[in-house]
Length: 607
Image (tube, rainbow, N blue to C red; front, side, top):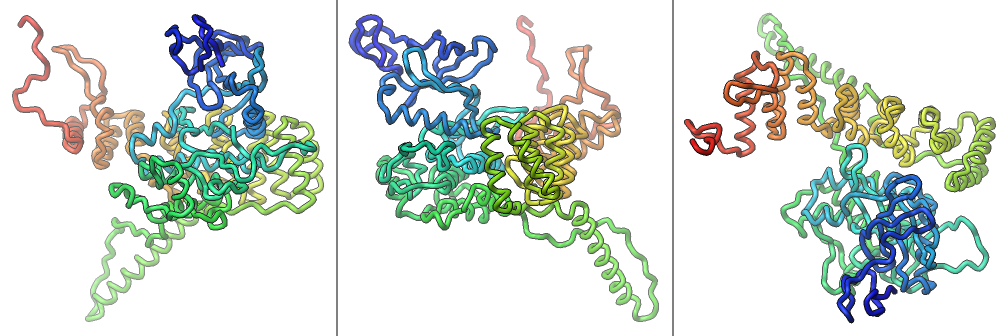
């Protein structure tokens, strides 16, 4: 509780003016130095438990966020312990889709604080407020959420308050919607790092924790929860992204809780008839929201896999090249036509079978979705648990020592190789990590879909030193489970050869539809060295019929002001084709046509 500088009356941090004297309320933390190294710059917001500030590290000159437990709650043990629990949960988690907490301590006045990375972006709730999301966008976001949950659950942390307000979308390496999950303040740590005798559980049986709109039935009943409570909340969030509203809504929070307990979730089409969601994806959403946790997905990975499977189309009929050359077979008596048709059908069938074998044989094992890796034997499992604990504590020396000893005894064990890759990554030995991951996948293809491995590769794709090697691993050894990462490479950036490689890899695993052909062809147009080559790409962009290509096409023309012209490129070989392409896309975009005789420029004043 703060006090007014004018009359000393008690005020809250979120107050703007003193209720007694009307004096403006100033935040005492602004300008203060917390933890001897964090200077508070401004306040971002105030929540039920704490205030969040933008701060600067006094020595490193780096922006970060500081979350301070509200002064009026510092003396209340329950809130202090919940704040400490957030710090403990965060200490276990190191994932690109979870906010990074770097420090924990007390201010000079005794208030608890957390230091964490500063995120400039928008909340998922704000993104959802714009209306239903296209299916690809919603799936791209939920995949990141599920990978983060899988990491947290593997570390023994259940969030229990997952909701769009606790999820930020930030820009990283050109991707504008990178997920960051926040606020593990009521997280449940299911496997404590230290079995301190007499340690009391933070939560109590029969007490409800969470937000009603995203509350699992077991949470609503006050029962003990596990990872499947987060799966339920993730299902509600995906439903909301696709439909534009939550499955259960009411102004009465108690009624919402009762809906989670007793009402079957509606179909997405019932909530928003204007939205079209493929049935397999909707079925996955509804399974995530099953009332009984036993009927939900058992893990975040299982939910993720179901969504991946829902996107895979049924095996299509063999593709036959419509431009096969005509086969001329001369007539011989009355059997000529029949023989000609039979021979043609036979040759077409053989050609189709050969084409199908060719398409399936380019990357035979990479088209399949990944299975789970084989579990380690009991004696090795115990060693792996110790290694993971050391990794969490940053003790890579001890982790490496145990793993190298295990490798000498089990040179062909995939999990040992995989864990060595994680240790090498933690030591910033990226090339070595790639080698270990490659070997682990060769020994056990189940590691192709490992979320930690994929997260590390995602980070290495942004590292100029390792981006090519990381892309090689995705293309040559992982395939389908890396479709998200390959689509990201194929659709972003100005490195045309790299984007082509990723696009080809997506086509090889039957995911070519995920390539943004307009964006790719616009880059091809930009990079084409001659007028004739540019003309080909103008034709292709015109055939795609997407008005997004208009700026690139118009950019080929020189700009004019009277007799002076500048910019543009050589279009001498395609003046008519370029004009026709622009006109066709203008028409598709609904751009009104200029009337004949309409001047291109406004008259200057005074004339």
